[in-house]
Length: 407
Image (cartoon, rainbow, N blue to C red; front, side, top):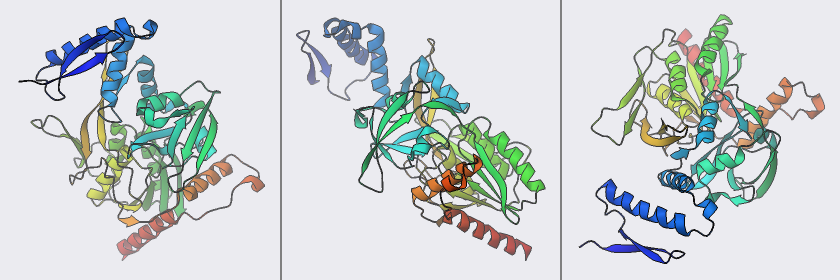
């Protein structure tokens, strides 16, 4: 005999019977309960203007999805438009990529030359409050939305640093954010080149291909690819970058979803340009996430690159965008990413071949100094040069490989 619990709608003075959690066997029974509650809230909520059917349905959809995991969400028309702008490398906000780690709203990475970066916020910082609202009350989507806004407006953030106990408040002025994904392509040590990818957006693979071609003409024989602080982006962009260093037809990543009867979705290297003979070292840290982890994991599995740095963030789930007729959309976690050797990225991250720990403040200062030099700041205002021990280790490894190859 089925047991029942009761949902009490006090303002309406009625009780709605519902089966215990997990006892539904079909969608009709569940929808019946939902519509009863919807009707009671619509008729009895103390502020009727807040309980229109459209608002209640959208709130219900948002709550349903955010309770699945931090990355599934209901996107209203504005949020869906913002998401599409993100992948084109242009959007408005403070310049923070955030995620949930151990239940806390955590900075994956601040984007360079953005308000958040200039304020000194670092990868691994925990956001405690946004404009006075405690973040444990917010979904990931709501937190992003609160930090977005018109350029020139301010947002107040309270930050707890992961390697300290102090909580600091920042007042940050929003700006129009433009992301340059491929930066600092240059020769750094005889025949060793360096390229940094800050985010995987639509132009990334094409920009990297152009940079590699130019560096090869300058005598590049080995490459350091810097993915530190790269929060990810488009899977297609990650695949396009990875295939530049693998032979055609090699497995880059595959996904497994809820439908176990279906074969995994596999992504293979394609294209006509492949730098398969160039020794490669990849720099990673806790701010390397999602698409960065796909690139690093694939090239590590194929023994095509040596990973130097620290364990990556561990965001390896697949979100599928399902557009709706009214301009809104559903972002739903539908699968997890696996490296070619079947390692699960999600919540595990990618372990480097050579671990070199470095304080996030040191990397921040290195980036800040470079930004100051590029903007022709007066010498007295440029911060002191700091040693990038992770980069030095990667260069040393590649020097050894080149000597071995020569012999």
